[in-house]
Length: 301
Image (cartoon, rainbow, N blue to C red; front, side, top):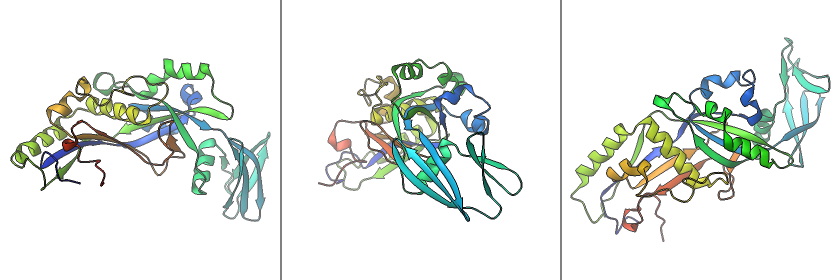
């Protein structure tokens, strides 16, 4: 797999998120509903808009210590069971269920919690990616949340209609603050004379890539990977030697960029018309058409 490759040292710029926040698009205008996530929301510069099925709670009942819930998701019914601690009771108030602790605390059932419970039971719920964007501003002064409050595409998706049984969901991502470079050393490469210079170039990129550049590269790599229907820029043009965004990657002679997304705590799996539903995604892009430079994602034949 490494034979016939050009250089003995190749670098890939790797980007991934450190934290996330997710909520229904309608909650953008309800600061109280998002108060618990505000600390994370204020750090996120990448956003995804997607469609998720509405989880409907059809019924609850307690059988001894077992709480049983009948849930329907996109027309499919499921029964989930939890074992409750001593003293917890199931209450119904004005047609809404809640659990009550022995101390009097109330626990309501929300879509996100139902999604998590479904996933823990091996039933996956999909987030169908419709649009990916970013907001940065001057020195990171603008967040994805602020951008979304007046977002034309979000309004367009809403106006064009969300199919029955689904709702618009927002996923905010905070790409990790530092840079990460993956380096491959190839003893079978054709050129072994420039290794030291190529290591230095990779270190330059590691320390010199700005947060703004990283945010833009991460956004473009994810758009190219998911190909969301409401994106146009980057969907078919990334990567390109003519792209200003990638100029420094090419100047430093990087071979590839990698954008990861996926959290164990995420209540659904991301997907699109181009990408199957998975819990973790790796958007991998070679920066060179020359096969001798494509070393990170080569397949054994």
